Image (tube, rainbow, N blue to C red; front, side):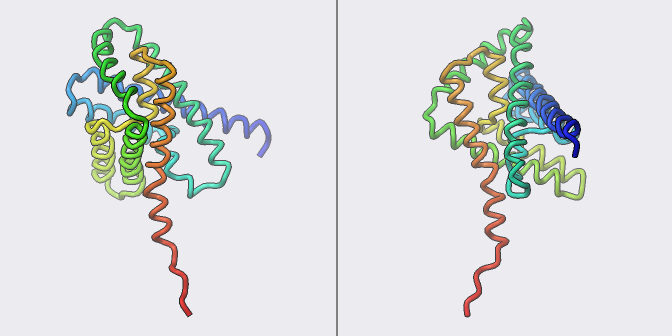
Length: 219
């Protein structure tokens, strides 16, 4: 592959990651605007739906497939994470200055502050639980043969993690930007959520790989 083509590949990778961050941010807007926990969890699904339908690059979904790829995939994940951050923060910063959402963001920000102040191990656990469900949603969408099965995998996988209050790193990048609560604690919060998302995303695939291995032969 020529150098120009390689650069274009990485640029496209980043571009699709930025769009994915923006898509998740749209789901976050729908969640906040709904003002209802159940409705918000359902409407948030539009974010991952756009990611999957348009073939965009979302870190929390891509991390689940590390074992299926070559080592260069890790570098791609770094680029995807940066792109997701750019997309989510950009949309969040724009929404923050739209008067229509002012009161909604103010109310949401109070709860967000309490989430940031939670014990670190609880934040990590919430991130783990979130990405277990993300894996269920993404893998179901990829592998099921019927459209209604794909839709249900996406619907339940995403809506349940939102309803339960599990932490999604890219969504939280949007929330922190939209509510204007970035701080040192906010950066640490995103880091802990990301760690949890990585562990949660790898948990089921790792167990699947271990279970598929043939046991050692006993002579």
